[in-house]
Amino acid sequence: MREYFLLLPIIFIFHDMEEIIGFGRFFRNNPEIFERYPKITEAYKDFTTAGMALAVYEEFIPFFGISLLAYYFENDVLNALWFGLMLSLTAHFIVHLIQSIYIKKYVPSLITSIICLPISVGILINSSKYMNFSLMSVVIIFASIILMMANLKFAHWLMHRFGKQLG
Image (cartoon, rainbow, N blue to C red):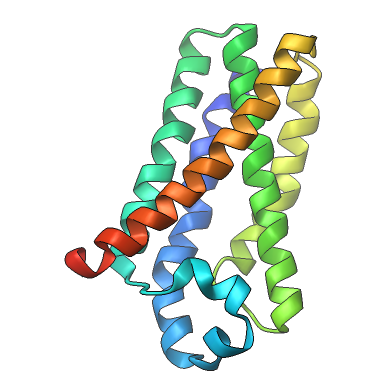
């Protein structure tokens, strides 16, 4: 399983570079998107590229940190944390696909979501062969997913709070 651990932060940063690079232009060229889809775009109000980069950097820390710890100190707890993060990232790709289908338009993140989704699913399937799915591990997996959802909210808060100051 060790061979998969460091792929998580690599896949994350590959995907999020498309978001950092593309969302500013996307919003400038599609201002109506905020009016037509307020629930989807709520997370991106007051968007700046600098704010987005800060949010991505903050999100990268747990992906990289847990992956590095799991790589060097492989045990059931770290394996479960890593697996939950990988599940979270894979779900993130699915959300972007659904967003694009829903608004019937390319969104910056679609191309890398299409590329990364099958790779991530393959990693999850292959790494699951080495997982110990004890009750403790399953609880840790779900807890890490919930923590990453909370972290995403925090990252968006950072993006709004500091984006204009950094931009």
